Length: 334
Ligand code: ADP
Ligand code: MG
Image (cartoon, rainbow, N blue to C red; front, side, top):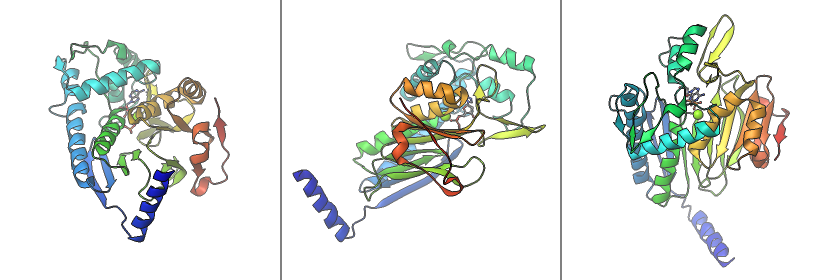
């Protein structure tokens, strides 16, 4: 109580003195996307520089195409002694592939390439091509032994579905170690926040309307990652059918689970990133079962029919915005 009164007093003094904490922002391009980091308070400038250096290091190690990428070297058949970061992320990712029973599969890369999502030269592969490629899609073939990774012939890794989420977690650690208490980062579509806004209120994160440039919802969050996978992010159309970049590893085709957007809200960025992809593959019913089996995330699903489903943990912090106001909502409970 005393501490509360003291900090309330301190806050009042700061407000009266007009001492809003200093704001530091850095914007740069990495991991194929625009990253924007904002940190508040003393030490924010150095923390941002450290964070950017870390992002560049992770990008270098994890990229599927980069010259000195460990992933690229492994994909070419080399035995690679993994850095701590790559080993750490790979082990987290393989754990999530198993936990989602392969809805997330970090060896889907050859299939993603066959559809042209790696180059933009889109095409619908024939079923023979797909079934041949699917023979080598199997995350259980990825084994790290004494810190070294050797992939069996035909197997290729792509940590793109989890790299930004993992990077967000690592940045949050840097910020915490620097003693920061308020920060927000946007890594492509991934948002992750430390603490609350400098004024003490929760961060407000907007989630895209799949059919426009506007927002469909807002969630208020503290110490959370908010990650969305959408069928509207990267896709092509052929003969009136839309093909998007989230692939069902069971079929080798774009996941048609009835969902067009999956947002995961979690303290863990890597979990949020992995599950935004995996639950998109699973569909609403399996997603709800999966949520009931864990207690470390919430979700927002948008169905192809426009239906919106959220889990009870974010009921009080969720609101519709713009054209979506008065939209109906289903809340999943345990
Ligand atoms: P983005 O990278 O656009 O933010 P995601 O985090 O959903 O989106 O990751 C999608 C990327 O992951 C795709 O571009 C593809 O390379 C890869 N991918 C697609 N389907 C799967 C899957 N089922 N499991 C693992 N990775 C996938
Ligand atoms: Mg993802």
